[in-house]
Image (cartoon, rainbow, N blue to C red; front, side, top):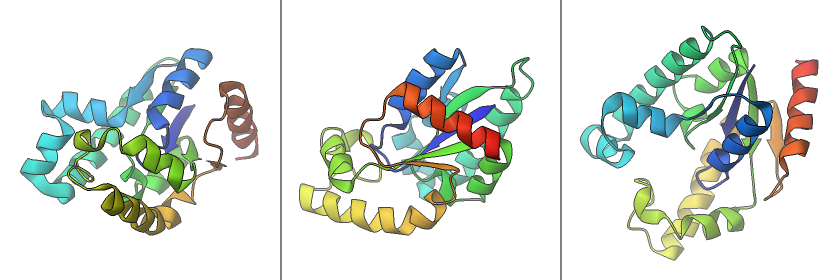
Length: 177
């Protein structure tokens, strides 16, 4: 089984992916890190060179290659922390739903804001924004992406869910899908 963690930047995808993978004894992949390795460039450099549109094309290609690579492993399972926009482009959400369990980490916008103000410069879509601009950006993008995120099999609204509860929810979703 492949578990795809989706949600806005700062929602805890990488954190929970690492916890889940450790607990379930599965490989863990951060899609942005896989993209950086594949392209030999940072996400920031990719955005600078190709713009968001070019980045999304690369993201689609790398996501599909990663899933194909996982499916040749004997256990055919992994946890993937997706980028915040991954589900919203190139029919990626349908692709992920067809190949695994999608989990939308959806903490309150204020929680996302508090997490992102500490790491703005490492994220190309929010780099250079002041706090007022960042808050506005979060609200706009969350609303834009909501229809994509809502297609996930599981939605987690808590800011901090423990790993065992997350595993139970995923197991339940796997059994009913």
